[in-house]
Image 1: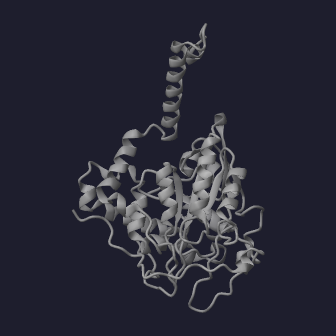
Image 2 (image 1 turned 180 degrees about the horizontal axis):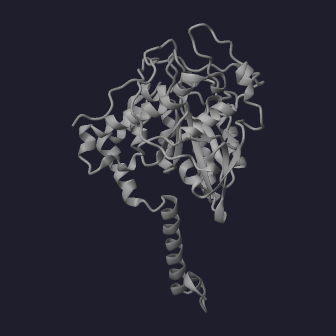
Image 3 (image 1 turned 60 degrees about the vertical axis):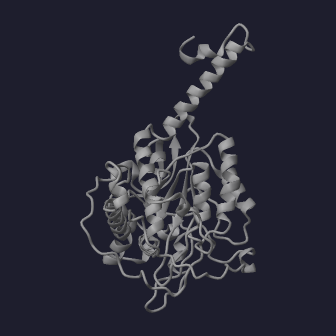
Length: 391
């Protein structure tokens, strides 16, 4: 017998010595699994956590009542992101060009990626579902956050918190959630590059704060640029897909949609969809900008069940390193062509952007949606709060 296998065999398997050997082996395996999950970057993760601990007291990370509500008729943050010199990027590898739906994970590892869309159109300010992040932090669950460039600006403090949290990876969901199939030229460029500009500007501002300067090389663990992109509405065409890849961004779709954009689906139903459909290499889509109904409660139910089945949560970037991406030539929700409907779904009014609708929702309202459950009234909460401590 070689290696650890000999620890599992004894003349008397019920002896105290045998039990201790088995216990030690379980601990060794667990430590190895944790190391693999965290990509053995303990020092980097500790430094990353130190940045957040230095700049944000724990109570500032918690959900705030009313914060998830959308504020209508608010154009405070409608201005386009200012141009800036961006970090250079390497060409996207050929195996990651196209629309990535999931990953074929090698070695039987049960890794999955939870993704949360956080987008915002011009003319309003979307919410922040703090309850979702309270649960993820409590459960130590990693997630990739597809944030809009405008959303980052209108939720500056929250964006900084998420950027400094070792559990979360920041990705792009376009600048103002416009259908890129209908955009060309500088408008297409703004939707793709705008979030990159916002992210790098915010990261630079973080590095200059007094709380960050207390830490040795605090920005080492905060990626200098965004490397992942999710198309608004999950819709693209050949030109937009090519432009995203040319910008050094991998286009990430999903293979599991929890359907939290339907107010008629309960947390139990949403959780069941996650648990039933998740498989090794899955990319799961949900929402954390207040547009998802019962998302936090669904995750509270689903996460323990998935963990009990042996699933581990990793970021999308980590998932891509664990196997071969499953790539499609087009972007779609559940079948090719189903997101093309967003070309005609909204009647665009002069001077405004097209309406907002999350990926995965039917063009025609379902029976459950027709019940028209209303969102709670907006509170007096302001989404723009003073970021970071000053001492």
